[in-house]
Length: 116
Image 1 (spheres, rainbow, N blue to C red):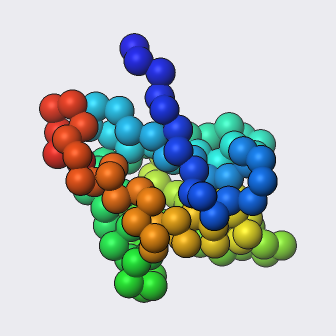
Image 2: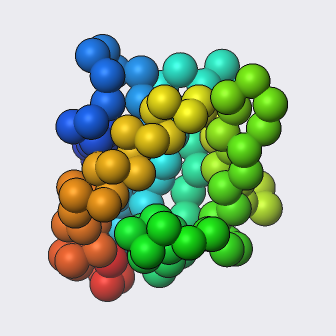
């Protein structure tokens, strides 16, 4: 199995603690390097594309990736099986990266055997 190559937004503050994205055959993975649970959310390129589209339009996101804002600056990215926790500063950096097109290549290229 080829190791995942993770990418974070250039808007992330200094250090690696931020939301990271990686692609594998037919899947997109999201994680937060500082998430104490170490969760990795795995989704389809279509679901990730819907998240990107909603964030670029600055509208609410819908299933299959749900984004909720909790108390004390917590932000949760959730699918039926996984929850990744981050904070608003890192979430905002991720959104700025999306709006700048930094993750569009995950959707524009073919991911071995599936249209990403």
